[in-house]
Image (cartoon, rainbow, N blue to C red):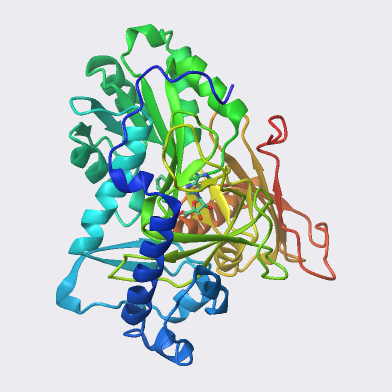
Length: 441
Ligand code: DLL
């Protein structure tokens, strides 16, 4: 199924996608040394890189210190910025473990690289100048909307900046303007497909031929469903705000892994426990070093994303190593309807509610196309009320506290004091049942 023939001729957007491996390695070493120099403008790195000299071989990378999300949070708001304030062209951000954002500044050159990186995977997935693209990602601090927007324009295609949500309007655009491609999370694509079906719209009435999906985990089974129901060719693309946003990697027409843009990102796959590299093809945590970022370079950033790297040449001619689908995380971050949420954010919301104990469990399901998060919240002894009205009001209050901290609406179930499981070691508060019926290959 993976290699279902693409309904278009492949077109390489940028010759740097096909650099011979030896030339790529030389470029990486050169860019890495420049990145280290730039990073030394950041006190955190200046300190850590004190005893690091020039990098001569890519093997030396292992000697560099790792950077974690916690490190970045410690540098709130802009301590990791390596450019002057008047050199900032844009600031994006991503949610953090306590509701605090991580802000990511971009220089003008970063903006140029970014749109080029997005244009690469869009071209690999079939987008051509003259096409019309409906972007259903949020525009704002989230990198999805703006990142893809400029990528589409750079390629020479046109954008309908529909933004996130409002499915009725999305549907009207699909039906009435007939874009050639849609850009969103795979979950939202499935949601659109379901609404189309419910409204009795046949996909042949639309003109969508390509879908570019990313920002959350999905499976090949899910891809097959989206493709059948929307009648499109769907590709996966990956990225994260701390590194650049979308554009770190994307699939080519062969769809056997996402080509990492290795001229911009040095990627390693390590065992999250031992921090040692895993063998090619084995699963581990991706660690990324930016090679051209000016605004906020990151050295050996622990993405927490579990994937594997395939260095074998690909028939498409792109030489970037291919990463497999992201199958999970090595921390407890959840991605719910495309939004990153940490369990500690739920804890923070519950602490605002006098009647609730900080004991809770989260269950993630996907009964239809969209994720549903249900939080079971334990009441404090003596706080249970016989009044239905009071309990409904309390539930509403908890739901709104959770939504104000996490940015998304979750279902809440109130449960009796002492009824949830207690943990001696690390608490396991999240049960993810979303992919149960569609096991990952
Ligand atoms: O989600 C950037 C992005 C936007 C990528 C649009 C693709 C398309 P963040 O909000 O910082 O950035 O979330 C990054 O999302 O560490 C992964 O856990 C997850 N993620 C991103 N792409 C994929 C994907 C954007 N294709 C976090 N498959 C990452 C699985 C993905 N997970």
